[in-house]
Image (cartoon, rainbow, N blue to C red; front, side, top):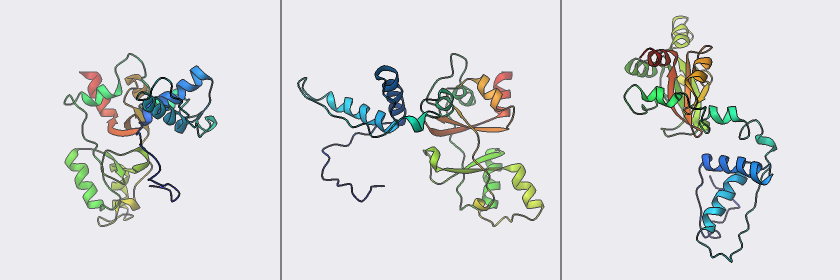
Length: 225
């Protein structure tokens, strides 16, 4: 999505920067340079350093840091938030990512549905993949967290059908619940165990993107092996 005042003929080059690199640089600027700036600033510095590699030593590079870090104290500068979205490791203990890989040695596809699918279709998908909770996505994976619209759980959907509050032909968007709690794939199984003591299912993220689902049953199966 381009703003109307952006003239594509002006830039000579566009450098793509990942969220992970942007956030790491944002924290580094605070730690090493004493600059409390936001994620866009970290992104700009990463891009500037990449561009500078191809310049002579005498070159002068000017980079604009466009945002303050005050609005990110609870996010980029919060270790727990960074771990929850898969940007920081939780330690040397077995990671959540290793648990979801343990089923077949690789990350499973993210089983999901879309908001315009019918209740009947969603039930069929849940039965096919043997899942009791399923996220609702606005796009096909890979997606970012902003494209996760909510989630559907089997228990609530079944209760609505029996009470006549839902019909098989309804769009699932009419009956989806809030998003699943999130945990980073780099977090430890101890963190997962604590989170799953209160909920049945969590969404696993890596560098800010959902990559899978972890259930209480998954964790128990892993721990019992």
